[in-house]
Length: 447
Ligand code: ADP
Ligand code: MG
Image (cartoon, rainbow, N blue to C red):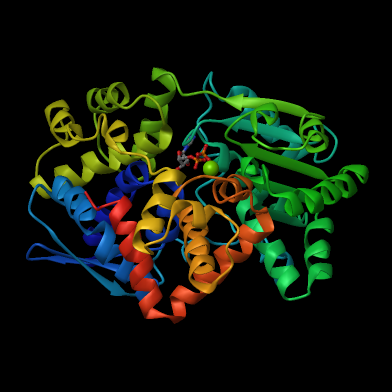
């Protein structure tokens, strides 16, 4: 089978995997993988480095094989290889705006697909869309900040990047980052004693776009710097747009002064799409990709996938990949057949809890839970504790503060330090890496 097909199938598989594994897992291990080749039941997946390839091989192989087998309706054996293929997801993101100095555009990495033109407007997202257009046309003067919130896969990042691409086209210095990225940037700046650069980068923006700001909750040092960044930009009428999975008042552990600022401008949400909007999104996507699907077929997909636009796009990809593999025409029967394993997958996943991780770490290091959470500072205990912090950050959505709390009320800074230390150590120390992977396997066995 030729390369494009392997790439396409893997892209569809990623859509499925994104729903099945938790967000940080997806981000760490899967996001940068590519489908390299598929022949004789062997599916070759490219990973950015050996660590990721090894992790996927040990921990996610059966899940991946199951997803692939479902997609191609055949037993598939997955193989993982290191690949720096330029076709991978991260590399295909491009910067826009030709006449702007590199130094400025390099701060804003956008998915070229995420524009206002490709955004389908419906009842659930009309207000957010209108507000986003408003701030992109008249930055700093309509609503500042603009705060958009809503559930996963409803187009928040799409809108945020559409604002960004418009701003870059209008030669505005645009800084786009996820809250997680902002935090990592700060930590790096502190470590490398470059906090002035950090401050310049964010405070010199004409337009600051921060995605997933719910991650700011409980991160004290980040909040502190963001508070000042916010004030400085706001005072000089530069536009700030924030995106979150919940309204400001529901972000856990967000200090009052930030919460109130987040509510200064316009707070608006995106709602799950109604049937007409789902159908319109499918029609737009089918048209753009040259997929010849009848109204019947698209309606059938729109009826089956209701909650989330990412899942809706995944479903269309899946149906098309299925038809191609079966050499069949797109029909409503084929849609039913192709999507039969999709519904309900989300509910089957067992969530990994911090408590389960701490317990597994204690067992593996043969240590009492009370020691792990207590004050002992001998080397083995400290290492086990740091591994537990690392794994909770890696495999759950817990904030730094929540991780610290789980391990005997340690500070977010301690957790950040532990996370970075272990992340660094496992890439240099194969023995520790095996141990950490072994622990992950125990609490999240590949199903
Ligand atoms: P969120 O950030 O809310 O989780 P995303 O912005 O990542 O969601 O959207 C998920 C996918 O759905 C993206 O591929 C995006 O382009 C697409 N999408 C979301 N809303 C729309 C829309 N209204 N019209 C077209 N595509 C959309
Ligand atoms: Mg998003």
